Amino acid sequence: MNTTAYEDLAEQQTALSANAGSRALYFALAADPQSARPAAEDYLRRQLAAAAELPADLPSDLHALEGWMEQRTDHVGEQYKAYLAARKAGAPRRYFPSRSAALAFLRAVAPTKLVDGSWLYGLLRQWDNPDFHALIRTYLEELGDGVPDKNHVVIYRKLLATHGCEQWETLSDHHFVQGALQLALAHCADSFLPEVIGFNLGYEQLPLHLLITSYELNELGIDPYYFTLHVTVDNAANGHAKKAVQALRQLMPQVGDSARFMQRVLDGYRLNDLGASTTSVIASFDLEHELVDIMSAKAVVGKNMHSDYCRVAGRSVNDWLAQPAQIPDFLRSLEASGWIKRGEPVENSRFWKLVQGERAQMFGVFNAYEQQVLRDWICSTPGEGPARTHRAMQRSLESLAPHRQRQDSGIPRGLIRHHATEPAARNELHELEEQVASLGSKDEVMALLASLMSPTTHHTAVGLMATRMFSRLLDA
Image (cartoon, rainbow, N blue to C red):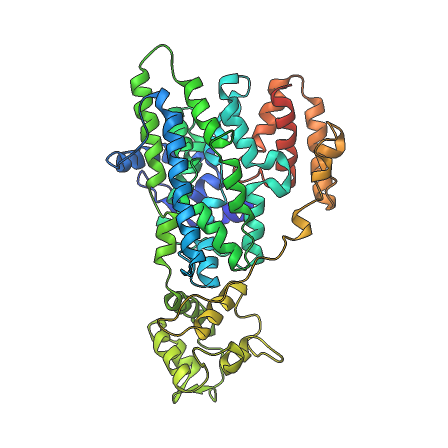
């Protein structure tokens, strides 16, 4: 979603109150973080209070952190080993019984994934303090160091677009909790530094669900690269998990109340357990309920669009679509009248031929994701096992080599620009180069670049260029 879209959605919200919901705050922070900051600070306090009683396994002893992290990693590894053995022995997929279940998951976690890494954004202003470099480097790596095919948000946006899953803005408030927390931490980092450190420490640990998700997406022919990338960058040996422990050690106050600081770190760690999680989102998916929701949304527009002679079970289609509560019965009637033949290939259903095929009268009504849900529902029968698996195809060349060959080419202008093809983008990048050249100090340059690396702009052409320049200048 572009910045204009964020602004449009934010304008639809009422003024943020002291009890602003997660979804309202999410879009407000994306559109105008400065105005939304008071609400963000209040939101963080409320969420910290809500999480205060949650269990947490984070040790309070700094010297125990690495052992704790290694033990967690070993435990996840053993669990994954057992999962693979079970799958080899014939066990079904644990998370995604169908392709549509996997796509629904991608859509449901989009509010979180599209602000990936944002909780560290507010630390960029500390670029001249070496103690912050571990966390700043983590943020830069979340941004792919400005290389598009490594930028996590760029990758996820492409994944959503590929499968028609871009329409996520109307998800429930619960789905926006983690994204709102991350954006709030991004723009309130100076007041919530220990909480940022704690949240980062929890978020960067390798979870079992990441490994299983990657495996099962690949089986279903859905590119798992976004998820496998996190498996590698979050590793406990030298990845983000290691940097998270390093940062805590470096930023723990040597003079003052270190116990209070550590308690706030623990509070931030607990924030990871609020809102919709990967496993709760997966468990909540119901294929028929999803289809009913899709059909109900279509009915709002389509209830007056059908001819009178188009009838099912003696009633016009317009009549069926007049009330969303009738959609489940409408689907049953489509089955009973032979329009849909459950448990058979979709090509055997007349209704499917209206959606896809030569002279399909409903062509374009359903996007790729919605068609997948409809397809899986038609092909399924109650109580059947998971759908047939197949291996993912090689990732598109578009997402591979264009920029990799330039990584070792030094600081030349080509590396900074990557030769954007759109004239508007070229002009914007040229303007950024001129602005940087006109500034009188490194402080001014880094401040300008950081302003373009916010959670809602870093994935744009100018944001990617700013990230590349910031990364090069950080240790210069």
